[in-house]
Image (cartoon, rainbow, N blue to C red; front, side, top):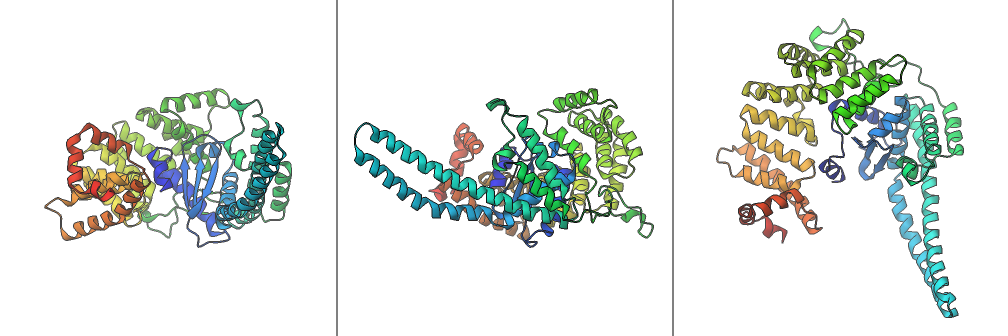
Length: 501
């Protein structure tokens, strides 16, 4: 529900390449954690503040700003392993339990101090009462800080072991702490220049850095250089149409530089701002932009609708990095945007042949096909996406893309189901319920479609009722209903309002 609400307010950065990089790195760390069977969901937020957090259920969010600040994938993995340890050690639950235990004795002590202060009489009693209250509040805060520090120490200790076991350089955690300490020292000018948000919940001290360095020195370093997970293998034992991406076992994935620059382009306020940022970076470097930064500039141009300019940046990059998935996908998209549909399709189809179940390939190609808005392109997009359908029930980007493909293919029932699912996953359960009930009225539904729709209505209705009970309303939906009274009457007739009462 929290993740759905973050999506609802457009805080989540949804991109299949970035998602795949973050999830693969997180899964690799989780498999080496203290509880490898614990499910985790990793997601990227578009905020450029340096921050990351973990919450119940294994949900871990990472701000784009944290990746932009890091200098290696090992540093990002160090933060993720720390947050994973918070989950596996149940620190949130333990904090709640401790707060419950502490609250009653501290409250009783505060009441006793107030009673003594009041019995003394005179003008000083009010001051003594206030002092007692403030002292109790300070004690509560200090106990929480102490507990947080113990959590942080435990997460550091366990997280660095996870980092080493998963094949990353354990020095990554200490080096990121040093980067955060430098940021803290450089932000002491007042409230307007406050320290990064990450430091408010993860205070960095010289002792903490030293301990991380000492632990890292005792742990093995990665010994096998990793191949780039974005490079397509040319193993001669495999058919040419079924080449697989190489999978690293030790060290970084090789995708960090591409991921960081893609994040820079996507997290900027506007594509024009991202292009201007790269121009400033280029002027500040003696050799201009490096390859990853040129890739990021091309992505920014793509977002700005400059397909030809993006293709001119990407073509020499692909020559220099042949077979790289990130560059190949971007170039195919740039060719489509610049009007060279034949070249784009040839490149996309080659990727589909070699990586038939790759989420990034399928979603990017389907998005390009959807923009053509023809029944043939819609049917082709459906065919590309269908192999991913069974494992994409909780993927809003997939559902939205599949809905668009089904819509232009003329499959309105599948489109309606997918649009409703996307609305639910994006924090709009009430809209999803209304869409499904409307879809259920169609006379051309077959048995299987009606069964699927009934099942989703039954699953979504309790969520909507609970949100209504808590007073949480869909402001967009209610605004539309206020603008159209007849729609409100129709909704009442359908029984929604009666159910909520």
